Image 1 (cartoon, helix red, strand yellow):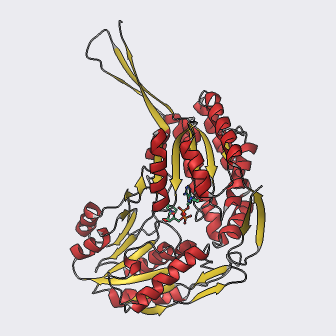
Image 2: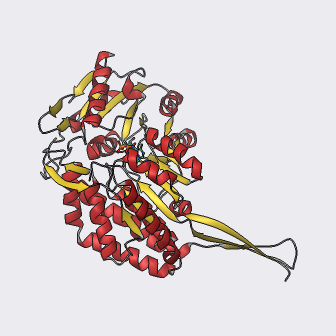
Image 3: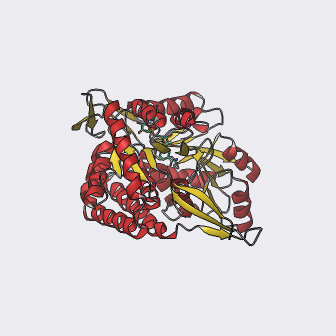
Length: 462
Ligand code: NAD
């Protein structure tokens, strides 16, 4: 049987050796999930809500255990892991409530001897594929609405971070959610993906990860006309207007850029700064980045942990080197630490000045702790730079001028916008992107829609 080894990215220590599910085992799980839908969909929404709430309670009871597993396999500072566990739970409690508001409607018919009704029902078995950067929250914001809607759920976690997910699924079963209603598959994405996309038991694929893999899943799923939700890559602009309160901006810029070592899809990726505040922003931001401590996430003084793996590390180093070769100045950081024996990869918090649009970092997602700063003169130039990307996930801007703020909101082609807010994600709001950043939304009332089918009933001969 094939094995999956899970390592601590901060130390290189082996954390676990898991057996991977074979194709046959996955197919058996898919059939079980499909069969379980028949009974789960007929439970009352109040019963489902109570089970989801109980699951949330158990995660809270074990939050320190889950956070430790997460930091060990993902590398993020322990306080960030704890924050993610609470955020993951907030999706469960939100959707336990939302289950009770899956309303249908009646529509006036065009003749008196008819009645027209519309009802909503769970779509069926949902197969999820999730990334390593938020091992808990990326799952619960799919599982919460899916289970609430009456769907059954099967998830394949990322190869680098399966342990958090395995623990969460164990807790779901402990809470009383039947074992075939929520299942976990351990395996390699490129092997599990086609089993999910080709299965007639699966009605929907929900994916969070990179845009190339998302495109592949969409095309693979076309054969069986699967419903698709895609949360893909980003390339967030962070626009700082001339009137912005720079000290406040720094707090938001540091949080938006450096949390999870810059490995979030909504991380600020391009700092677009008005020339009148460029010097002040650059000086203060550089000083704040310099104060961040790089290290093992288990150390409470660590602010920035390791990068997840060599692939991620190589991309970040390549972007720094490319920018330097094209004339960027390294204002702080720029140092990379690769331990070839332990296979650990760190990059110190880095700020780049004298950045130009031809640099890779201005057109590709970084997924690392590197902040490029580019200056602008007038707002339309800033907008042109911001929108000049195939991605459209998150965008940020900082201004206290309401006309400027509304103008930016109107013209930015992004699904999530933070106006004077560097951390906009929350369970009650719709999260998702324009263009190649994805399809559909997670969170908020929009987040349950992708798990529901619409059924129209016409009653005649009255
Ligand atoms: P990735 O696409 O390589 O991996 C994500 C998941 O897809 C993993 O579980 C992996 O095993 C699986 N996978 C890989 N190849 C596959 C295939 N051929 N078929 C099916 N599944 C496959 O991405 P990553 O490097 O793990 O994550 C980083 C990316 O995820 C970034 O681009 C980031 O922007 C994006 N992301 C997006 C969001 C969002 O909500 N929009 C959130 C987090 C991360």
